[in-house]
Picture 1: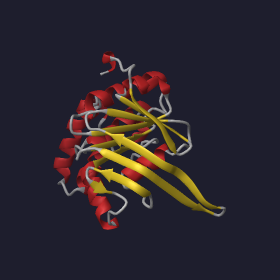
Picture 2: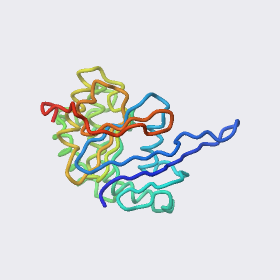
Picture 3: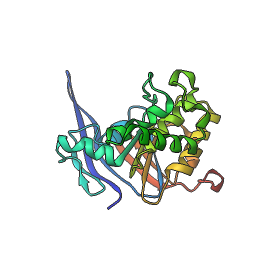
Picture 4: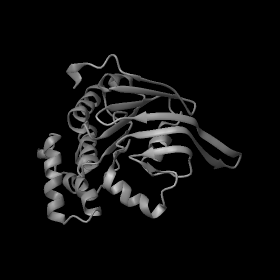
Length: 235
């Protein structure tokens, strides 16, 4: 079952004032072959939801099924192998290792899976080539623009060919032109028939690149609809 399914999902965090309920019974599905955008105001629970889906957070109640795996019951020792095999994550602030070149950053997930260094670098080069970063692959993150750093981050997330790609506000630090260029690349390279792609954003400039839009508000999912405005020019 190559899909994501959440039903009545609840997540609370303990604070000095008591329990803070961040997700309040969320129902959500994401299908392979589509780019689903998870939208809504800051603080509505979007990042918490994808962090639970990725296995980066634990402690939720309800149904959280990722490719047939019940993430609420998965043993901690099984989470890292699951993520290494199945999940690519693009973080809002890129999270590149400052002392490594672009190609070395991209190779990191493959090294973590046990691939020899030279083979990992070769696969990293292929992925960077697809993202138009051949000329910049030996540069450090500090030598790259924001858009270029984001492309390296996307290459790192895709280099191990994950079944699930999660992007947390991938365009928030970019200007309009660079943001649209990144989303166009995501559409062209990341969306595959056997991959679930979820992009968290509150940037309406990039909604047109989605197949489906799921809208959250105050810890709840208030709508999930196909994007009637998706343009063939954006694919």
